[in-house]
Image (cartoon, rainbow over all chains, first blue to last red; front, top):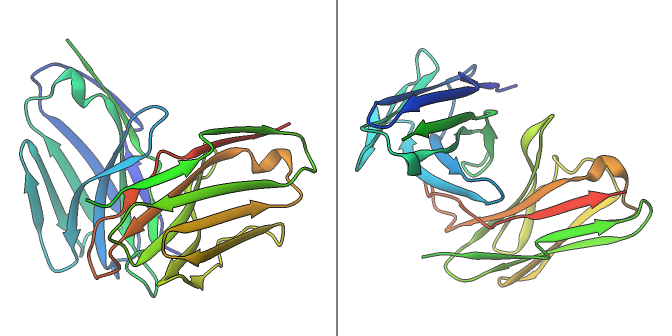
Length: 113
Length: 114
């Protein structure tokens, strides 16, 4: 069974510092990997989706890499801002449908002014 | 952009009562997913539909749970009878159903079973 792990569970950084969030998965047979953001009391917002054949995706200050062979993905957020404070979840597409996602437990990020 | 409206936002009920959660996709989807989030187990997929047809319900925890999608604009998740361990946030998510499409989540229903 696919297991997705996110380390650290929580992270606090001063504004302006770069954020590095890690995600690891046990089975390399994935359709894709998505990074989501969740604000308290809200739903999830998809930030980046990396297809299994891709190595990275970028959107603005966000960059996500994927190394299937080692079962790892990293989300980089450049020049963090207080508005980046949220929980970030990693999810891999598994099984017989790309839409079935196995989620990690998330990393709770606090960016202090 | 696709959007999802879930209702109610909060539901408090007593053990043994029937609970119905609703999901209304705004537009532009072929697939609909029901997820549950708890502190202990994180996010879990309960069931998903493609073109209104249930494809995989292996995540539905017990026979007390059932889901329907009578048309492309509406889906329900029903728990009967409810138990305290069903307390969680239930999310509905949609996608266009094509490979490697992002999922769009609703704001969720916070369910508390007393």
